[in-house]
Amino acid sequence: MARPWERKFLGYSVTTHRETKLKVSPESIRRLKNRLRQEFRRARGRNIGRFAGELTPLIRGWVAYYRLSDVRISFEDLDQWGYAGNSVPTFWRQWKRPGTRFKKLMQYGLG
Image (cartoon, rainbow, N blue to C red; front, side, top):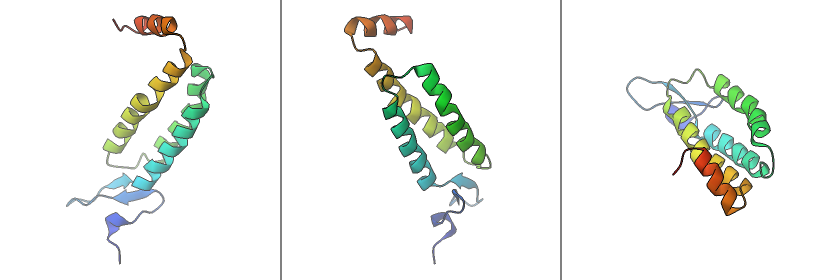
């Protein structure tokens, strides 16, 4: 028999601490990351504002479903992963010329 923290039910799992808490199962996080990777790959050549508007219902729905989770670190990790790993390369791919890259980085406050 498997221990409770090795199981998942409806995308949730429990922690291994003394006081059990609900957390998002690792498999659910992995599936969301794969879905977002696919969406970010499709974002090439598209308007960033429109693309963000299309992602909003997906992310809001996911967060609303897992709002019962007591462990917030998974949400923070996903937030960092999303910004650092995907949005910067998307902008960088769209700014094809070095002059454009320079101007845009200056607009965003980089020296």
